[in-house]
Image 1 (cartoon, protein in one colour):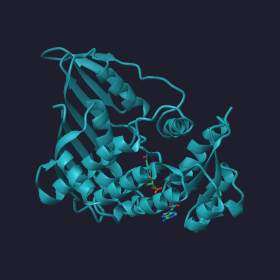
Image 2 (image 1 turned 90 degrees about the vertical axis):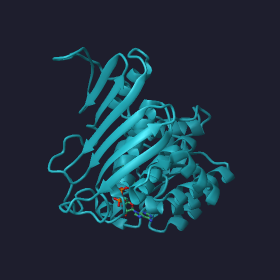
Image 3 (image 1 turned 90 degrees about the horizontal axis):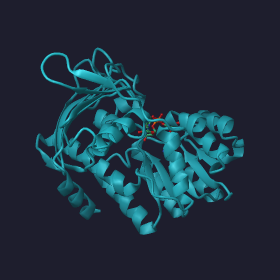
Image 4 (image 1 turned 180 degrees about the vertical axis):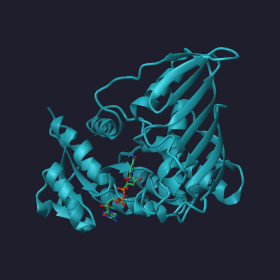
Length: 352
Ligand SMILES: NC(=O)c1ccc[n+]([C@@H]2O[C@H](COP(=O)([O-])OP(=O)(O)OC[C@H]3O[C@@H](n4cnc5c(N)ncnc54)[C@H](O)[C@@H]3O)[C@@H](O)[C@H]2O)c1
């Protein structure tokens, strides 16, 4: 067996705590990768890396530059808020490392395009962990649509609505940044819609706002329509300040209208509906099975890629399309206009 790859984890608190306890130990058990250092500006967060990744205290750093200068590694894992992703990418590329980053690539389209260009110029590999598209329920729905059994898909409706209206109930920084729903939530749903429709976006029109009872500095609520390049239409409802949580994380409502079947995913229950007036005939569909989903699966695919295996589906060239849809939707929300997503991406890429 090849020697395990070595990585530096940046961000060990918040979601980084889950990476330490629920994602990375498995890579060690599989003999695929092991930690050589961890970084967090908050020393309190180091305990996660020490406990779960068995790192000694002197391999846990608050100074990112020291961590990268002192330790040789094959790749960096980025689990800090999006505004800080680029600084970590710069360190990783400066030290000849590949990158596995949390979403979104960065907190602006210009930042995403800069990172994209830097990674390409350096000739490194980068993937972005879009956990929800790679969850069991969404993968099952995507496979059913793509099986062709239900005929061509013509439109998709997606709902994600929450009661997380109190300050800091969705993690403090999300209540302070602009466009928190889209940047931190809808980016996942855009990726899911791209995957299910089998296409990148052509145009997007977004209306976003924050109701008076939502304790957010930016917009917590959105209604969005998209036309994909292959003609599939998508309608999305997202909310973080509702009175109830109808479809939270991992509990999405997604309805795909195919010519010969209406496929409904609701809170991990997948069914196909058919029939005319009155009660349609509904048939339950079993979800796909495999050992792990979401980030543990993505982390494993990334290591296999670095070891010479196939490129995983969440690689940077795929994910830049997700970023383009995200920031084109924000542009639409801010201007009130329909945005041409591919033109928006091309203009931003040309500007860096
Ligand atoms: N399911 C998902 O896909 C999912 C869920 C949650 C978070 N995330 C992503 O994970 C990333 C981190 O989010 P979070 O909720 O953990 O944020 P967070 O605010 O909880 O911060 C995570 C950790 O990063 C540290 N940190 C902040 N700035 C840093 C810097 N410049 N250098 C080093 N450490 C720094 C913090 O001290 C904290 O311990 C984001 O990109 C977010 O979108 C993804």
